[in-house]
Amino acid sequence: MNPASRSSVESTDQTSQLNRQMFGRRALLRNGSLVLAAAALTKEMLFARESKSDPKAVRVGVITDLHYADKSPAGSRHYRETLGKLETASKQFAADQPDFVVELGDLIDAADSVDVEQGYLKTINKQFASICDDRHYVLGNHCVDTLTKDEFLGGVGQERSFYSFDREGIHFIVLDACFRGDGKSYGRRNFHWTDANVSAEELEWLRGDLKSNSKPTVVFAHQRLDVSNNHGVKNCVDVRKALEESGNVVAVFQGHSHQNDLNEIGGIHYCTMAAMVEGSGPESNGYSVMDIQPDGTIEIKGFVRQASYRWDA
Image 1 (cartoon, rainbow, N blue to C red):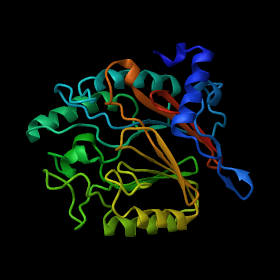
Image 2: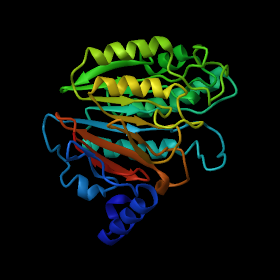
Image 3: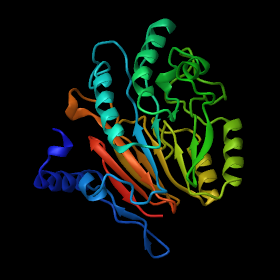
Image 4: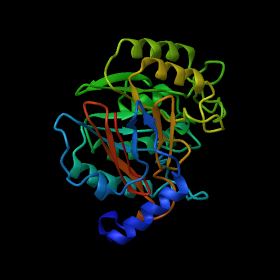
């Protein structure tokens, strides 16, 4: 069902159900102030107007786990359908006009050969690239299943797999956890997906980047930094320590496990986004638009399967 056509009763019922099933946790307090204003809110409640609530806010379009491939479905993953789902998302982004868009990893799925996988990448990125000139790609394990990192990055026109940038007084960090425990980069099926790590070199860079920055900071990752199971980064504790010590990190946005989830650890929100590849049909899509205010307050408008959130600085 198109979210714009839901009745107020349906929106209320679905929001209540989502709160009960997924986010039945207490609101978190910091220094007596409400940090998590709402765990799951409807789009109508979050974005009463399409315009930014503050003209200096940074607006970001977010998608993750498209797993595009020209192959038949496997289980709940419908690889070919992400082209149509991305087209729907692109229309929403055209209306909301984000300052930049970010893809949180696994843009493509595995192929039997480098040439075929490069074809997958060319097809999906042609559509993604048409959305916005300012784009950012987080490396996912499936991005480098058959390709090397250089081949993937070259295919999307991005220089590095981890880096930082600023927009309107907000600092953004893109992380790469596609390293084995021995520090070797993923590529050409030389890894197991559960062995995800931030390399020692990257962790050193991260500490230095955070130390040199005093702005509210948002981090983008693929593998999760808030769990210690198979979907988590093996050295996530070290990464989280670096983020917490900076005192400026507001939130981490991640994919990989394909389902909405939200955790608060050390005063930082870890928000896992819904995968676009999961399920068949337009009712199975998932994407979002977020506004980040100059003080670090974040509002996220989720569409279809993607949950909506708001939390204050």
